[in-house]
Image 1 (cartoon, protein in one colour):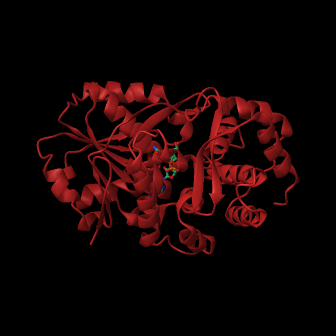
Image 2: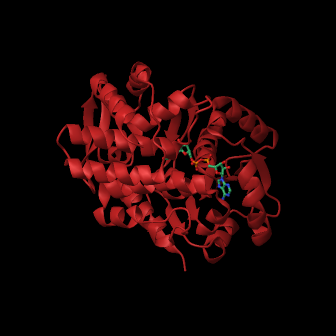
Length: 357
Ligand SMILES: NC(=O)c1ccc[n+]([C@@H]2O[C@H](COP(=O)([O-])OP(=O)(O)OC[C@H]3O[C@@H](n4cnc5c(N)ncnc54)[C@H](O)[C@@H]3O)[C@@H](O)[C@H]2O)c1
């Protein structure tokens, strides 16, 4: 049995692909060319299952998007668009994005720009892809250090979330997705936070019920504000700092993954929430302790405050030239459109420099 959740313009189906409507869905594209986007890892770990279990994909083309955030760029898109043109991919053909958030973000972007948009589906294979990146119609790529600077809202035709793909996902990648799950709990559900706080990330398998919970939280927020004019900004909790930290470290030897950066951003933005008396000290302490239990929070040089703030000033979430942040009002409650200034960024760096890891 699969669980079906209605999203903005498509269904999210959670459960084994073989028990899902995947086969039936593919049959409705029987005359279409099917192009499967993979990266090196999903090519090695996920593709074979798809090709052997579904005869509808016998003639599918496979296109490799190079793995890694540094490859989520326009240059790669150009190459893929050229290859698609060469293969005469048309508007009635179908793209299948089989991968983590990078494949779904970039594959969705490539599909939605090509010939003014061709049909695509997401089959997320990373935890972060399942609970976050594949949900909510945001597609895009990076521009230099600016994350997701180029992109469009575009809906896949279907999202198939098969937890089976998580079996080959390295534990550090499970942790990346887990950071977004912790965020979901912090902005929307205190009981879920309690469950996640006591989870053994190293030894336990993420229960499908947790995947469903996170997807439901994200999807409910997205449905209430599909193009991010208000409530959807709740999902940005941890991301103002997170994206800036990810950007600063991108391409350096200290580069960290998106989810890890968000985890650090959660501590930073919970700290600001506490400093503004939006949350009690013990709430902040609890959040910080939980994040540090799962993630390493590095100490940053105080001098990066300028660069961090500069990156934040270019964040898409800003309004009227102010850096806009989502803060917490408690565990399970958040408040959007909170302008923060450079002094608070400095204060966070000073706090992290003195806090125990
Ligand atoms: N569109 C959105 O709303 C949204 C939301 C959150 C994050 N994102 C984006 O998502 C990206 C991060 O996604 P991610 O963390 O999934 O990164 P990712 O796509 O790089 O995947 C992480 C790693 O896991 C590998 N992998 C994926 N599935 C696997 C599997 N089943 N077995 C073995 N290896 C596997 C990948 O090859 C990669 O090396 C970022 O670019 C971020 O900006 C987008």
